[in-house]
Image (tube, rainbow, N blue to C red; front, side, top):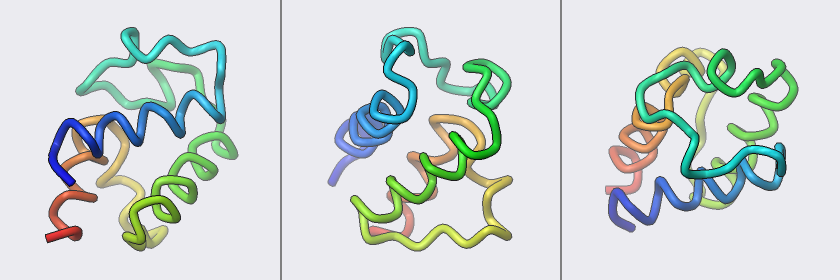
Length: 81
């Protein structure tokens, strides 16, 4: 997977969790919880869904490393290699 594929996968899972969010409106470098008004359960569901789809474990201790779209993309890509 490359950067674009991982980002698209994250956006797809985000759309499954919060269908009212337009993928084009998701900021790259803002905290997804604040920018999109995701509650803690929505964010947790996003992390779990991305983990399942990519087979990359994201432990709770690393949640602060995946708060933005770009951060999550980089995190997953780093562990896919």
